[in-house]
Every structure is written in C-alpha cells, then in structure tokens.
Image (cartoon, rainbow, N blue to C red; front, side, top):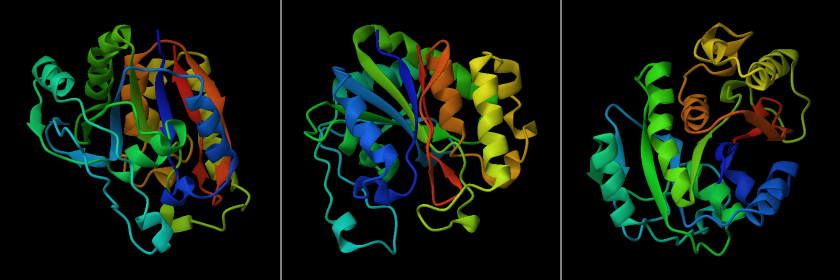
Length: 245
C-alpha cells in the first residue's frame, strides 16, 4: 500500500531550479505508481471543506514576481470527477470546480512529469483544530487501499519575511524547529505534534499555520513517519519530505 506523504514544496521556482529537493522529487516519482492522487495544499485554504470535481483542472499560477518561464509551465493532468464525488460524499465536503495551485502542480510536475495520473484537490480548512485535521487524514487513509496517493503539500518551515538567497545557511531557530519535528515524528509522539505550536520557535517558523497543517493531514492518513528527504532552501525553507507508512 502506498504511504501518505508530506511534501515541502518550497518556492514555486522548485519547478525549474535544480536543487536537492528538486532532484529527490524526480527520483521519488519513479518509485510510485498510484492510480490517482489526492492532494491537500496549503494554497487552497478555506473555511469549509471543499473538493475539486474538475475533469480538466487548470494550472493556477498563484504567485507573482517570478520569471516568465514559470508562468509558462503547465501541468495538464486530468481530474477524477467520480473519485471526487465519492470523496465529497464520504467527507461531507462541498464539490467545486477548481484548478491545481502551485502547492499541488509544482511537486507533481517533478514527480510525475507526464501528467498521466488523475489528481483531485481537497481544500485545507485552516480554521479547523489540529485534531480535526488529523481526523480528515484518517478518513482519507482508507483510499490508500485503492492505490490512491494521499499528499499533504506545505512547508516544514515557512517564514517568508526572512527569505534569503537560495543556498543560504539555515539560522538556528529554523533548525531547532525542524529537528524537534523530526524527533517527535520519529518517536511517533502524536500528542506533541497536536500541540506543535508549543515547539521551539514554532510561531517564528510559521507566522500563519497553513503551511504546517498539511503535515497533520498526511500524518492522520498514515502510520509511522519516515523522513525521506531533508534539505534547506533560502535559509528558512526546510524542504523535508515525510512518508507515513
């Protein structure tokens, strides 16, 4: 059975910049053969739970100030309206038509560059409690048995106000939080993770919670955590990828 994944998607430039995280996502995609993908992205934060039923989801360029080459990127994966409808009923979610934001299409364009696997986007109800987000993941977990890959896409650390050049060294407060999360996941200490805001420098790393919350969904959808990748970009973006088996 496929694991659930938490992917740190970093800057949109991950799609074009040959960093260790970029290379790892390309390698990882060659090892996975899902029949469909369900992705919960930090960039579709909502008040209520919604699911995209689009048959042909557009590529959303939900950013600014980047090179034209990034805006030229398209990820023409199909949707899966039947699966989306079943998920909407199972999760009591509102079906809507929506494309793929960069939290979805950037990592998927590296993992599955042929865009030949259907993708269903599920919104991130960012005002939900941590327990509710884990419970959402638990409901998604059942779909893993149908060879569906469940992904939470966010960022392990995400203070854009402190962004630095691509190869800058991470400051101690970034590593303290990253290391704490790694230790708590390794110990399967879910109680601590449900109170992640109490971790070292948590609010400095996440002034708003939406880029951490997909980890809680992925955690709920799987079992024991394994860190499959760790690197740093721009000093403050820990590009950690966790699999929950």
